[in-house]
Length: 420
Image 1 (cartoon, helix red, strand yellow):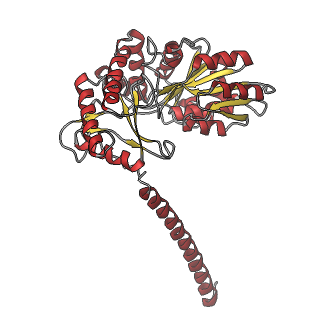
Image 2 (cartoon, helix red, strand yellow):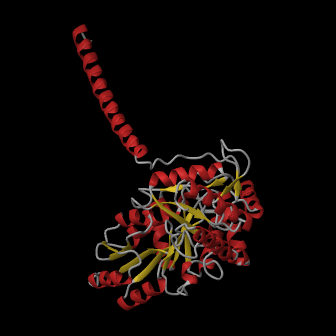
Image 3 (cartoon, one colour):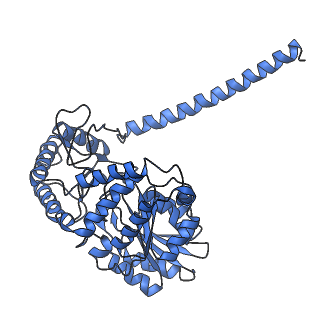
C-alpha cells in the first residue's frame, strides 16, 4: 500500500513529465508554424483547389462558376474519363472487389494483375513487368536491389525527386552529371570504370521543362563504356513516338535502353500505379527483394481494370497519340508570338517562364478568374528564380480550348507587365 506522501510524490512527478512533454509539443508547433510563415512570405505557398467533377479538359472548381478549362493535368490522352476506361474499372470492381487487403506475394495477385503486366511488357517490347503502387515506389524499389557497393550509378542532376530518393537508398557509388551534358556524362563514365556494373539514369522527359533526354548520345556512351541505361518515362509513355511507346521509340533506341520505369497515373488512365519493365531476371529479383513491392498492398482491381483498357486502346491504335503534336505546337507557337517565353520543345509540357514565384501564383489566380485552370510552380519544385506556370496540353483539348487559354494568358500577361 502506498502512503499519502508516496502517492503525492508520484502524482507530482507524473505531472512534471506531462508538463515537460507539453512544452516539447508547444516548441515543435512553434517551429512548424515559423516554417509555414516562411513559405507564405516567400510566395511559394501551395494551396489546393477543390475540383467537384471528374478529370477532363473541362472541370468544375469549388468557388468558381461554370465549367473551367483545365490546362495543368497529366491527362495527356484524355483517358481519365474515357467511357471505355471508366466502364472497365466498374466491371473490374464488380468482378474482383474494391481491393485485395494484401501484398502481392501473400494473397494479393489476381489474374488481372498478371494480365496488365503482360500487356505493359508487350507495349514496351520488354521481357517482363512488375506493378507498383506508384512510379515513385518503382523508383524507390529498383536501385537498392540492382546495385551494390561495387557498382556505380550516374544520374542527371535534374532527375525527378523519386529517382534521387531511390538512388539514396542504394549503396552504389553515386555520380551526378550536368543536365543533358554528354561530355560530363562521359567524364563520369571514365571516372567509374573500375565499378562492377554501371547504370546511367535519366528521365526520358524532364517534367518541369519538357525537355527530352539525348538518349541516342547516352546509349552511344553507355555502349562505349559498358554501362546500362535506365529511363523514367512518366511524361512520355502513351504519346511520344510514332506509336506512343515513349522517348526511346521517339529517338529510335528501344533496343538500347535496358530498364524503363513509368506510371499508370498520367496518360494511361490517370488513376494510380507504376511499373518497371526490363529483363526477366531483374523483374524476378524485384519480386523477391524490392521493398515497396513486398510491403505495399496490391493495386486495387478498379485501377487495374482502367489501366488495362487504356493500354489496350493504345495497342490497338496510335491515333490518339498522334493527335498531340499539332495541338502542342498550336499552343507553343501562339504563346511565343504573343511574347511569352516557353521552355522545352515540341512536348505537351509547356512551361510559361516567369521567374518570380509570387508573380506565377498571382497570374495563375487571375487565369482561374478567366476560366482557365493552371498552377504556378516555384521553389522547391523548381530552382529559385525559375518560377513558371506549367501548361500541359491534352488530346482532349480542342483548338478552341487552346486559343481561349492563349487569350487568357495574353490578358493576364499584359495586366502584370509580362508582355506588352
